[in-house]
Image (tube, rainbow, N blue to C red; front, side):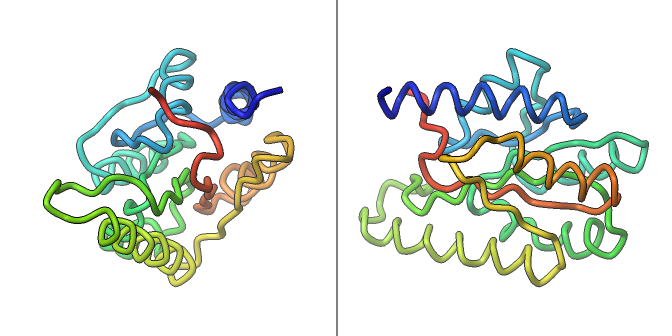
Length: 181
């Protein structure tokens, strides 16, 4: 089986598992590394697409406080640039939500003037910062292993978010789910 086909199956299976686990609604900004998952979820249950990661976390916090179990699709910079909302709302109140974080140190930066090397270095720094933000604020993180069945990993984050009523993060490594063309 080719890598592309494995990625397509992994995306479809992860999508099914997240929905079956009870996560809803799904909200997030556009992210190349999570684009296939975003598309699969959008076709299955819909995704509220917003312009900024901190907006997505804020919306998810409101849904969670109203009794839902939202999942937020975040690019690698998401937790880092959303540290304020995580620090002021999510962490101190242990707002139950799933943060699905793309750890993609190669993703494109916002400006074309930067060289590829400086973009990659900046993105690697943001990946580390995002992981540190999650750790610092006590948000338990579960790395997605693309070689394992998603059901087991989704069960772990479901137990944290839905059973224990705490926030959790599912960390998706670069290209684990493939990218849209």
